[in-house]
Amino acid sequence: MTTTRFAIASALAAALVLPAATQAQGNMEKCYGVAKAGKNDCQTAKSSCAGTSKTDSQTDAWISVPKGVCDKLVGGKTTAG
Image (cartoon, rainbow, N blue to C red; front, side):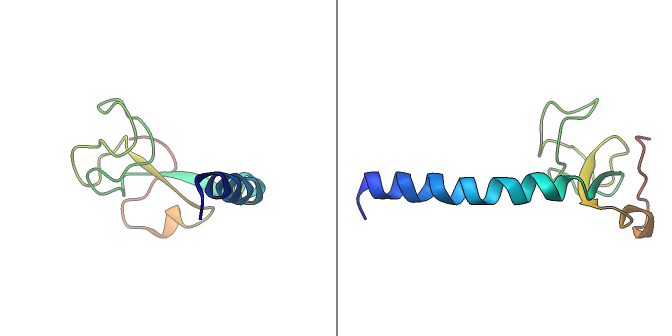
């Protein structure tokens, strides 16, 4: 596959996936206190960006989960600790 065809295929795939990803975000919520070290979704008070939490179950580190799932996870909270 040529570079041009690869670029076109990548752009098309991204255009098709983006609306589904945006729609799915409406059904997601932040779940604090359940992320493993280095597996958080976004910055915290102690970390500068995604994937930089230092400890498991860090109270200010969150991951995105489908709505309603966080309450079922041990230690999961929908607000930062």
